[in-house]
Length: 302
Image (cartoon, rainbow, N blue to C red; front, side):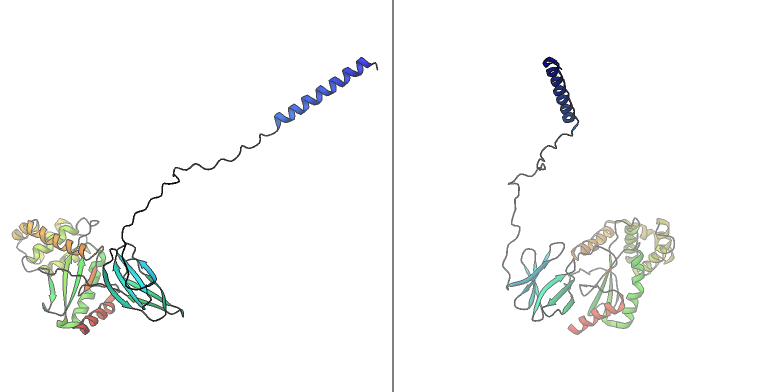
């Protein structure tokens, strides 16, 4: 092969290798781009804070907890006492704790207090604050001057409220002149006929037949419902003057009495029915035994 032919062959071979390398480079996947930091809408200096309350406690705190609604603060002090405060720092009371108590917890509303000591002993305590419930003008059963008032906030359309009535009757029989039962209206928004029924009971009270209407309304609720016709039928059955009944049913005075009970429910922090109070203390343990225990405690105080 002459020199010219050899040079041409080398040139062609080099060109083929260059084309092959270019093809491989084009076919290779592109290298991933460097990962960028995630975008954020928060500025570095966006955090702010505001002191809502600040107050000094009466003892060096060992443990503390606050109710779910933020209304009360429980502080275990180094003096073996649990100090109760409002969220604003007002002293609400003191509960003695066993020596060596190191931790506390509470139920969501503060109705139960739980204590743990360093030996591992556990204790649960029922906590209650007596509410000042206005009972003036409310219908009641029993001795008007009884030392214990058992108040029930109720709704005539509530299926659970009708079931508590036999329990109250049992308590009344056992305690004779020591307990009076006081009825307070709390018709719930979810029950369309609860308010008309409450007004009907108030109208019946004007004729001295509240408890007869009370029983008739619960009976109607359990047997077909509290329609307007059922309420009027109940009023007729217990012998009310229907002309006066219908006039009182929607009178401003009746609405005022209902609003008074609803206001009392709000002040007592009642959010469901039936809710019971023994001398202003909320009943947290149901059944006649739990109610009787609270009655006995009140009678011991007297």
